[in-house]
Image (cartoon, rainbow, N blue to C red; front, side, top):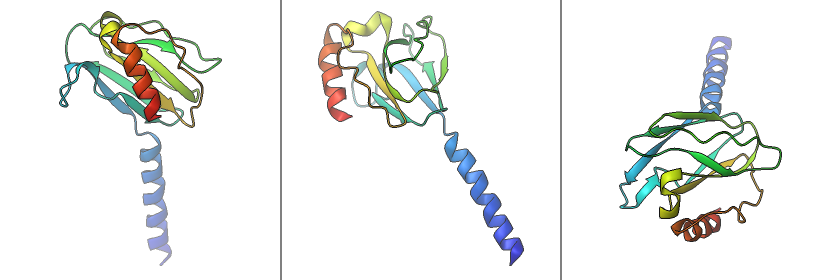
Length: 140
């Protein structure tokens, strides 16, 4: 019986570690399956502190540029076009990012890390991104 408990404990430990490190991949797209154009594969991504997001340019001409985040967070440089971007989120909060070439077309998205509750509603966005940001904030 001790052996069974040992294996159950080991299984639980492995599963917990795997679940805790459930990193996310987001694609940069010209068109998503739902018909939306100039978008990321996820409009809102929820992760835990310490997790990593990898952005993959499956369509050419896209990048990742962060424009808002929680207090005390160091804003990274915008990525180069057509490059894979990987970022670990160690600070809880709400982050807003965009594709620099397509920001006026509404190519923005949000990352919520942990119990993120900072206000990004005053972030400066242009064109269709204004309406999209308002809609995304309504979903949080």
